[in-house]
Amino acid sequence: MIKYKDTRWMFLVIPFNTATGPLSTLITLQILSLGGNAINVAYAISLSNAILIPASMIWGFMADKFDRKKQILISFGGTSIPLIFMPFMRSIPAISLDYALITFMSTASTTPFNLLIMESAEKKHWGSLFSRYSYLSSIGVLVGLFLSTFLVLILRIDVIEEILGFLMLLTLFAGVRLIPKPIVNFERTAIIHHKESFFTRMMHLPLMFLHLPNLHNFKMFSLKRLTKKPINYIPLLYIAIVIFYISSGIFNTVYPAGLYVKGLNKAEVLAVIGVGMIFQILGFKLSSNLLEKSKESHLAHIALILRGFSYIALGVFAQLFLGLPILVTGLIFYPLAAGIAYSIFYSSSTTMIFKVVGERRQGTGLGVYSTVVGIALFVGSLISGYITHYISYGIDFIVAGILLLISSSIFKYLEEG
Image: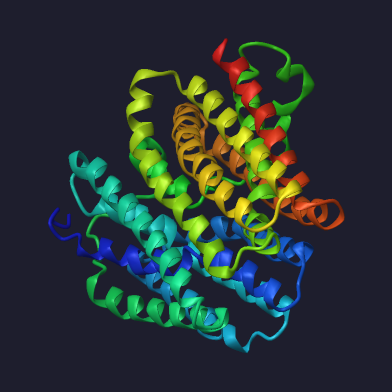
């Protein structure tokens, strides 16, 4: 097995996430700059979310059969090319398709990265390596957001995306030299038997298919099972998380657009998202301590209340104000929602999912979970465009907040047994 000290390749996740981290916000601003509206943004994000299901299936199954290093390098190269060609995308549909291709190719490296960490060291070192990997990934996203914040003041967005593409190309060349070929290979089932590995994998891509589910597997959502304890625990847990992802799709898809339409410039939009990312990093450090002291369902319940009321507050201000009040409330409530509340909810809910899929027939249960989460992401992002276009941004944010409070009530029910 590769020696523990040979982990320099992990630094590649910094430029990788620098290039991919700010993309959804940049794509949103690019579409609006071309005269697009909330529906155009929703279509682009929805297409990207829809791609996640086949991408996670295809690249996941390939990870069990294919060379780790080659798959990661294919991901780097396949992500860099559509980024470099972004200035040639002159229409909103072309930009949306190019972004979907970026999403498809960037997900190719998610599972191989996870497995490579496990294959790079003895098991006793996995926890610290996954923590390091997550930290470097977060730093990369943060660098990408704040780099874009300054570049957007002097360059067109498509030029920024092209620069990020060349950064990814340099990452590819560095990867050829730095990424090792492990002597021992693990299959993806190893991921779900190690908590830190599972956490890291699901944070970067919340879909994972060890087996393809069939219609029979979805009978857990029948009314008979939903109303009977204790067999309703798993389906209710899944439903609560699905509502969370629908809400997140409704809010996150159009929030950057809402900031821009409500009077913020492009740099201010990126700055608000960047501050949210800073608080998310801090939140994950806080959540690890909270999980040692409190029940997961209780933490999820409290986190969703905080996130829900933050969304509602942002919605109320979006309904009533323009300009500076939107910036100020964005810098207050968005970090609470996307930073602190999200990190606590993610840590607690993923712990609950880990305990469930670690039991018998974990591949089937994880397949059902991934399917419903993938659908939820797609539906939420699609709905957001119509709510915003035909009603308002404020109402969209408020609807997302109310859904989170509904999800919170389900976790409260699970907490009470």
